[in-house]
Length: 42
Image (cartoon, rainbow, N blue to C red):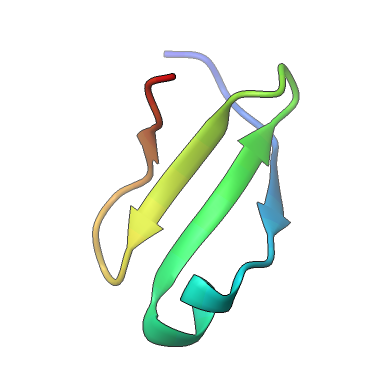
């Protein structure tokens, strides 16, 4: 399994526990509250 480096992207949804991240290839990931990060399909 590859190791990713993430950069956190701030959005107003972060205030309610929905966090977005961007990896080094430019793909976006989402994390809901206490769940694992999941890649956004797009």
